[in-house]
Amino acid sequence: MHRRAVLRRLLAAGGAAALSACLDVEFDDDAPEIPSGSPDDRPDRQHAWNAALETDEHGNRRLPRHHVFRSLSYVGEDRERDRGLVETALTDLERAYGASPDGLLFTVGYSPSYFERFGESLSVDLPPAGPVVPGENVRRDDADAFLHLASDHASAVLGAEAALFGDRPANGTDVSRLDGVFELADPEDGRRTGFVGAGLPADREGNFQGVPQEEVHEAAPNFMNFRSGLKGSQATEDRVTIREGRFAGGTTQHVALLVHTLSNWFDRSTQEQVARMFAPDVDAENVGPVGEELTAHNRVDPVDESALHEVADEHGVVGHAQKMARFREDGRPPILRRDVNTDHDHEAGVVFVSLQRAFEEFRRLRVAMAGLDIAASTPVSERQDNGILQYFRTHQRGNFLIPPRRLRALP
Ligand code: HEM
Image (cartoon, rainbow, N blue to C red; front, top):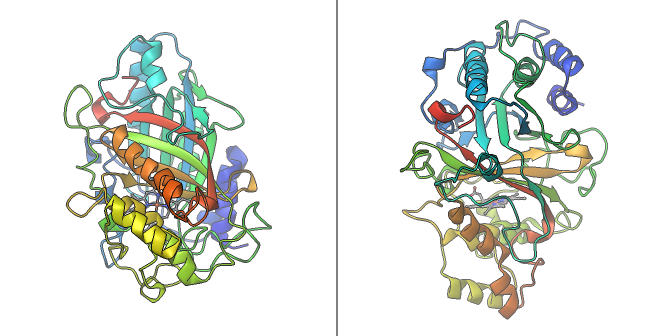
């Protein structure tokens, strides 16, 4: 197993022993130290990570390599006092780590049920978590709060967790503890980890359920081979920012846990995969086996609903990106995807994080992705040949408001 895969396993294990082991692996030579930071370096919008992210030669942004997601219950009794504790802890964290992938990026969000328990109405389009597509059977993540921590250093993510929920300093800086204010909403399932990086999905120990051994391309950035999140198919941070009301400057976050069912994905030719992932008229040569021929655009042309039905009739298949391309405004979709790979419980999957100004914008896209209308009237069926629906199941959904930074502590 390679170093990166070892770090991924340690992050998934979590806890103090994993943190020590991570520090040994990441800093056993003369690797540079993790930079500390200042709260003044952080932007007003918690979700404004883009300026800090690395870009490739086409302007596509790369998310940090390691991610931890924690669904949290608020267990404090005095919200007024606890606000101060939370703000102090988060500000301490900003001193401990620089505001970059080399340090730590993070957001904290709150669910509609959090606001409901205080009898407050949320003046933002964000329903409680639940099914998005008719007939869908998903677990609801109704946790009060949701913390997303991300860094290129597994030890920074683990270190931040150990400081907030344990008693260790983070990167040499003391951090106030949050464990009297928040606890994991579900000790079994309230913590997830994720990873980003070309070659990582193929780099693993043993088999994953739902993914045949040795099948994922060795250079692939995700389990289905093709890279995603190209600049041209992502909303800008401005586009997903709430403009009015108390939470102006914030955004809404949808978090879905997707588990792959890829057994016959790898029996398909690259052209068949491209037809399902992109569109049937996209030439696989112009995409490349892992998407390496793409620049900042996915080569999918938007088609309206009736033309999409014609594609389904003619080719017997419609593409995943193709189903959603018609919702582009000024050439770009209304949602900003920050999804990462996961191998929770040895199941290959995706923690699908989507940011949007209003939840309805996500819902419209996700309903279009389900393509039930296409399945009702063309040779394409509800799951087969209907984009990539056959290749994953949605296990859980959660909805959270990410307030602007000034309101991030128990709003
Ligand atoms: C297993 C899960 C998924 C995988 C592997 C996946 C992969 C991809 C890939 C490879 C692309 C084309 C490259 C790009 O434009 O970035 C794409 C585009 C896109 N995907 Fe997904 N995706 C997944 C789930 C979802 C879900 C749940 C949504 C939610 C609605 C979604 C929304 C989009 C959008 C909006 C685009 C861009 C459409 C456009 O070009 O206008 N994806 N996805």
